[in-house]
Length: 114
Length: 116
Image 1: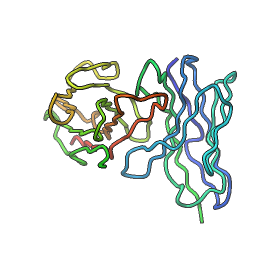
Image 2: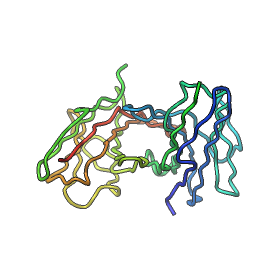
Image 3: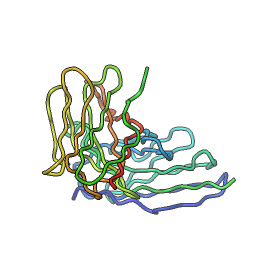
């Protein structure tokens, strides 16, 4: 019930294309859904996050879409750039009661070709 | 403003030895979390600490692993009698006392443990 399932495992996109990564969760008590970006040899860094009271959040080229009834959320990267090549992790938590105890998805390795 | 500092960045141990990983949180942060990342897997929560207190260690293996965050100094993750399966990247994260509604964690660059 604590799992977060992420797909695809890897994704190759041409420069300028749209990258889409999907996640599904089981625990309906989750109330915070962040996406983290990790470059090789580095730690994860928060990219964008959403709460379940909204269906979409956009920050620059990055958009989270959230479907509460389906228990799914996705990350869309518009106009993908080679510099976006990294591993992306979705995560979920009960932020008000479980502090920083994040449940992470398995990760998606994104490669953006020039 | 320095970020979360972890050392060593790389550590090699032989089976049966001890590994000690250190983490200094961001300035002003009093909450520390340890996560483990096995090869080609996501991060798994291990333990959550505040100064001198273990708040949640539900993700820690029952044996050989321990963590502390003393009043002075960095947080320490200690692995006794390491085995090959302990080979992983160990990430420390911190958050400020008042997290508000962001829930954001700030991660260090990790300590990569290799057990021979």
